[in-house]
Image (cartoon, rainbow, N blue to C red; front, top):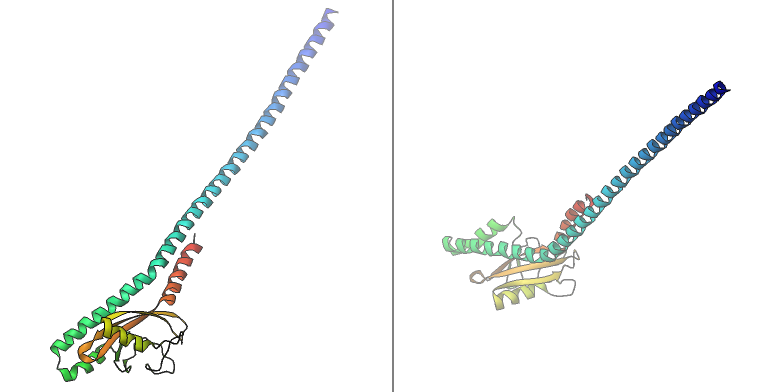
Length: 218
């Protein structure tokens, strides 16, 4: 009887050990699965956080770029006007040197020859073209040309140089339809005035194309 009890005891003990081992194995598999799930979740979460951080940084940079672009576009007209005036003033200095060192009867010819391939225009007080420069007049002569607002630009230029010696005019070209800024300066001794023109909208569009390429790359 005692022998049978011992056998039963060993069987129960064996079953208990097997049960414990199975439980440990099952718990181990469950833990391993949970650990893998946790790792995958953490990895996915880290990836999402990195992506979110990247998007936030990109948005921040994009907003900074947009503010910078707006500031640059706002100051573009001022910069172009300064560059335009500087160009005409430098041409005027050259003319003064030519006047000083060239015979009077030859000076006009020398000036025209010097600036014929440049964007400097030259006109006389009667509205006649000496050099056209980059002016767009269509089929009109300079004296007949009017801008989109029916303004006689050459008449305004003559008034500007005679009254003030130099100055800016803003106009909308009736041929191209584009906004232009003109700077003119008097050359009183020759009964001429010189000037140059810049298309502001064209410059702005060129700049915006450059900036848009930068923004697209963000």
